Image (cartoon, rainbow, N blue to C red; front, side):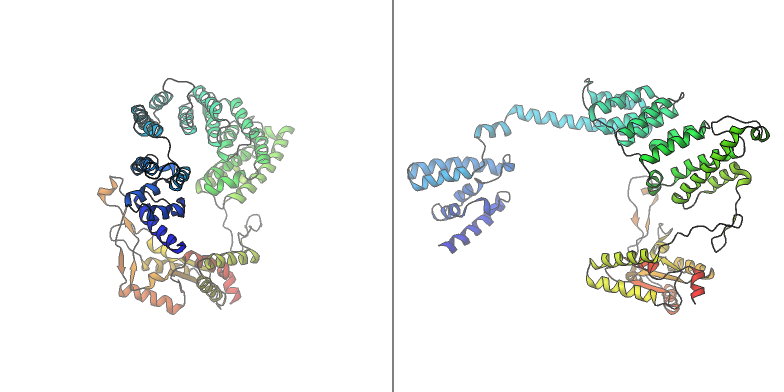
Length: 555
């Protein structure tokens, strides 16, 4: 009987749970399953007993409501046929304790009440209305339409000044009001944001400080108080929070105040410049160049560190306080150049032109020799290179990543690493060939270009490099994929995405000849099937790629 009960209950539950929303077999005790099959074999009764254990999440579904009605009927039938004192009736009472049905009156209120239907319709309408208002607010933000934004804000408030809106709404309003130089209104919106949501986000402080410093009459006291509040509330400070205030101090030639504030911020956020440079180096470069220009003006006797304009350099040299200013400016210049060296790998030509003009005889444009030495100062520039220990750590990490996809991938990558290290004449450059091949190929008829790779290779070889061309295995077949995309004239006037130029490309005889020459010159490597080709160029760069000068010395 035990075996039969198990088989019957499994078959019954599997069939019926599909019809009633996926109810689990375990939600119905096996003894009830046996009762349903042997005592009341009707399919309708089986459905009733299974539906009795539907979870409450199904309370508004039609199978649930039908099952509730059938279950109440079945309880009445059990009592009438077998009497209230029989074992089967007691079994039915036990089954009641396993059900999750709410009372019938509650079901009627939840599903059929006109008031409930009206309430749901009202909520749906309000949700749709708020969505339309938010779209209008977003549009106003893009077009900088302050009137449209204020109208949308008033609609969201719906005549209730105490209504709490989302932080995103306040952020949009503060941004728009601040950019339109409506500082008083922006500040009121900022205070409302604080009253409803507590400490604002870093972006809100940045917007308010920018608005305070860029107003027709800058409110520096407000900007400084907001920055102090930002520090006290332990809000993460980014460069965009302090840059408006720092730039204002530079524009007023208050270099000493600039460094006082900068040192205060760096004491709280020592990684101020590096955090910003990791996403965009332009703001870091802009601020540092402004400060370096001002240092140049002080060193050349144009202004003092406190912003006093000097008429001539001769007059300035006779004043002891100006000599102090120059000494401080020289130290600050050194400090700023240190920040620039740590966070800006290079600067734009425009920035270089500004610095040459500001620093005058203190700076010059020179060409650094191959040894990294400055011909004017004799200083050797710092090499941006990995130590051997750091290279080993990167190699190990890459092997672990490949090994996560299978031992075969790890073995192949390790073999590639050994091949790179075994080269008698080390490679000096690795070409990530697919990026070169697809460059500027997003036009109709564009495709993977072996010719572009070959042009880059020849140019590097002419410069004295031994370059390695790294290709995924699929680009060494007779028919290769083509991921070039183009946008037609019709698509350019719509929001359509770019379409594939061609899905596949047949390698021509000329292109195959290029690949064969690479193989003959032993400058071609392929990443295998299933591997990420990025693993291979990264592995090559830390396994044995050396500078051209070092490679020739080793040879």
